[in-house]
Length: 222
Image 1 (spheres, rainbow, N blue to C red):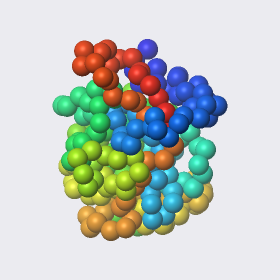
Image 2 (image 1 turned 60 degrees about the horizontal axis):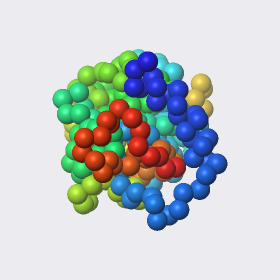
Image 3 (image 1 turned 135 degrees about the horizontal axis):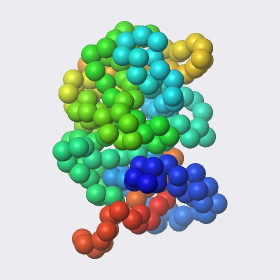
């Protein structure tokens, strides 16, 4: 089984165990690391970044990406990963300005954008693309944050590396079959619609030993 498949298999148990045990606030990391599995909240509209095996009926026809108000939905988990050209070892803090991929855990497709028009707002379409975590260079996003590393409690922006569009929500709602879900799209102008914050998730701690085998999880916190 590949690493992404193993992650999908382990996630429900990991989340269940995380819900059963309370970790002390003193032990919690205050930054996001590669290999972490997170939910991302759009701060302005209070919706979590979401995907599912439902394709757009227009534009690229790829898997749709939306925003949902539901907190518990497992289709809102995304794995933080390095790019195909620059690996990011599990537990390594994500730097401000670093290029990453966000892989949808349940379907194995990457957060993606391109010059197709989004169906509701006519902004830039955002989709989920690839198979088993592998797509193309249009899956890469640059983390825009204030300091040196991506802080868990910080509102950050994600800029699409190839097109420079910012991952955004402006409130348009879909009808059936995804009634009430918000459109997620790319916008060229930065605004309050473009800020995201990590919420629920499993966060990998950095290794204290440089030679550690990063193929094995270290410690997780919910």
